[in-house]
Length: 339
Image 1 (spheres, rainbow, N blue to C red):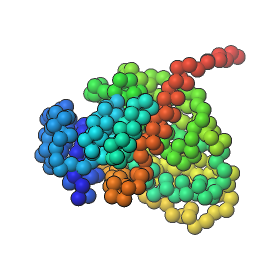
Image 2: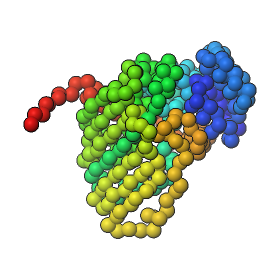
Image 3: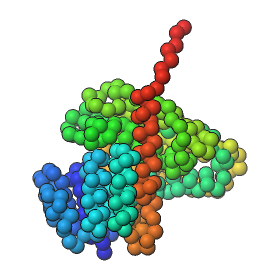
Image 4: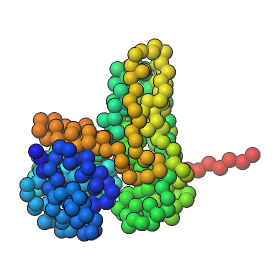
């Protein structure tokens, strides 16, 4: 059994621990809030640390799962890799491509595995859609529409020193919440080659955006639109629609809710129950199945030498698109309209 260490001490750290507990030994937990870390250690086992270097020296420990603020992932991951520890980080891999590249390089030099928690990639209906697209069942992709119309109350930001900040969160609704959907679009439809966008801080008192609209052009020739916000009260389930030359499908909360094909098949009836997380209205993860699948995949990668479903290179792709969207929003040329 592999021994795992965890960083952060907050909600997502507890999610990682809960998801890992079935198959890994909880070895150590690190965070700057000693009370939170000690509480987690008392509840789940493992030794509590408030000193990162001492945490990395804990043995036995084989893998470190990063749940610290996003802009710390690269620094923590590099330090762990240099100690010979495999690294599985919460999304995003970091907040810039430059920092992501540094972590990817460090893991490669150290010969350790690097993975990113993009658990939606392993949801049953997402895998089904990917197969349909890859096999041509949906035809050639033409159009995608993704809507992440979620809500976070003011205290979600005011109660945190890092959420909504450029320095530690790397952005707002897009980099934190919407990046899961950016990753899905890339996973299902391939590389994004061009973006246009508008961002606003519509409701919350934060440095970064709480609302974003972007148009995407894919290398395949498909085009798409993405809405991402944490200002849409009361919060709606994430929706993704994909149209190909052979039909259209709709995914809501990672479940196929509509499928219209020119040539229907029995596959259309093989629909899984929706994930039970109230992500549209809360950051709390109650349904940990997706995280468990990512951890199982990562352990399999360690044991077999194969790449995890979302390794460092894959995890960097969504950050590159988010960076491009932010850049496009900064330099866009606005054309006024008059009646």
